[in-house]
Image (tube, rainbow, N blue to C red; front, side, top):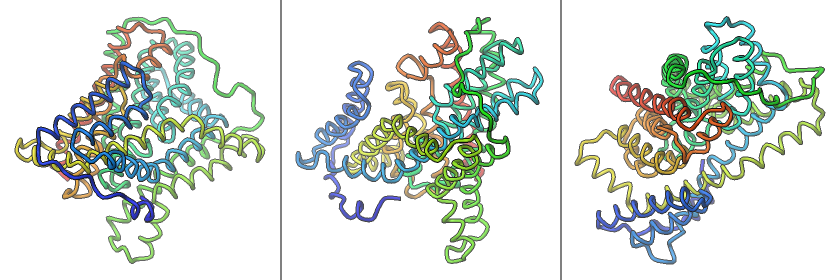
Length: 463
């Protein structure tokens, strides 16, 4: 997905150092610096990753004039490959929110669910809405619905709140087109369709265990919670026209169906020159799939809600502002990843893992866990871990490369705590104390991470 001109303009790789000790020191110092800059000095992750990349190259012995050459190349390649997809996903998510499509999905599913089925219904709603939405956007959309349902149905808040949060979090960490999995797919050269298919396969049992089943445990641990006053809905004005449930669902699922269709064609047809496979390869590419869904959403969501052409254009335009920071962080993570590769860290990790006989999947998970605990950012953890273990994926089959992406994504969700913005978002929305948030949200994230890697490891032996 990297433009040809960008690849041609790439600077030569930084000279590799022969000293494993020097490389290890460079990695530890750079990651430590990033952690301190983000957590203690409250520096923006983009600046922290940029400075960390320079420190990594300097300690590893790269010439001064090449310090940021690899970083710039990695930044450009990552933004070119992932930035467009993040932008299209944001446009689709904004159309879904502003048109009332999210409320249509929620109302339809909830109207057909009894009290016992409510936790499962909330998990389903969160999973469906979580496909095109970033985690924070999904939380803002879902929490008012959760509070309203808890009040109307006289259901304990944890019983339906945890399944909703689990649905969003599982999709965020394991399933493209979310930024973390997309960057890992790009870094490890994994097949997006296979990653998506396996991600959904792992996500379903993980969501069941960490959502409706763990909710019962969290309910006992946290105790009764007073239901906060429901926040104002995202779309307050009463609409004469609203999108239909079928149209909203079809729009959300279109990119998933197209990408899975490409993966299926690769297996069934397996002939790059055959016209059907070439068609599936085109329409199933993530850029075309998301572009098609966004254009369709302008009709099925925007026009169906009575939006004028100007209103649709304004809605799409407003979606790009909030994700500018995400694109820069992801790009800087790509730059840090490229610097790790060019100074030889990846090759050293390959040698170490061979000597220590550690599974590449488990190694990727562990590295992501450590960085997640230190920085609080699932995206930073995914990007950094993918850069470190990227050489291990070079000789892997497409299936195992996809599983490595999922292992890293699972590790990036481990134990969200006070250095994670999501921790405070959940705490404030549910009106919990820090202790209650740790017992519910933080443990739920850990359950997702552990269950996912526990499913990925035996799956790698089977397929």
